[in-house]
Length: 94
Image (cartoon, rainbow, N blue to C red; front, side):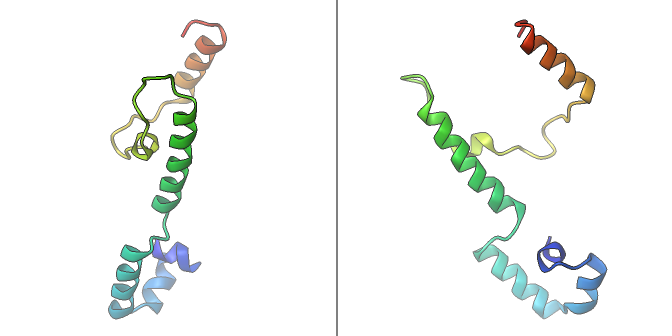
């Protein structure tokens, strides 16, 4: 993650960054995240706002966490599974 943020390969980052600088980057990241996590959270906020604007009266309020995937806990669907779901959706068999 840090190497990508700095525009380097991991090998380049390991060669250029000592443990003190790495610790400083870790501290900085805890204050101001620069990873995909921050972007995902920002998108989840927007998704929750849109969902709340269009939710039915009396339905529970959506939170950003409702729109953030839980890595490692969800099954990655195959192209075949997705195709079956899409066919069912477009044929009205959902």
